[in-house]
Length: 269
Picture 1 (cartoon, one colour):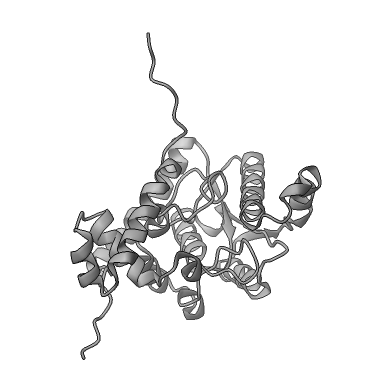
Picture 2 (cartoon, rainbow, N blue to C red):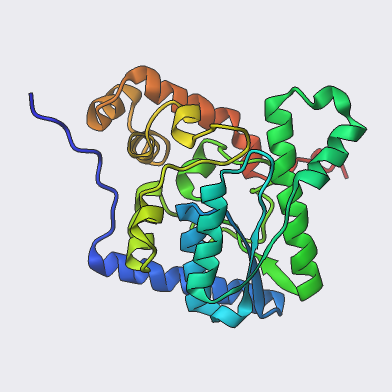
């Protein structure tokens, strides 16, 4: 039986060059509109933050990019080392800021939440957001997000955590395209191919939590969320199950609130 290749969402060489220039122009434009010259980025050692950092340096110059490496109690030491390696290879200023004391203070205030893995994991992400904005406000800078199109579509980010940013430079790219762009930017191969993790609790990996690999997830989102292809046809094209397709559709519908500003009642007068 012939093995079916993953749906190829990668750009052509011409498209990739155009997308790279488009994102760099976008970054410059967002800073110009805000009247600032600097950007702050959270560095995790993963492909998303690595790609964003490379793009920011190309758009703004290394002297105008500040990276924050923010390890927590469950952070993988190799990931934190990789984050520092990215900053050093790009020649950007960076600081290592421990989030454990901040999260511990929260748990001292609400001790009954200590055993809630999701709540504590989200508190870690939100602590990082507070630090990013503290530095950005102090330096008159914008916070550049590192979220991609795939994760945004299923709500795979923490509201007011890694979702709390001024803009998402790679927010229009599927994970497959992020990896392609990272390689084109000269990111280290081990970072491009690295197993993604949000680092919110010990042993966590994105694909295990989501329940499928990113190539399959990319394909389902491209076909049935962005392309409106019916679930049965999507499953056949993506070489997956209808159950997986429906799971992604449920994640998309259930996370709709994350992709919009908080609602208010319609005006009566």
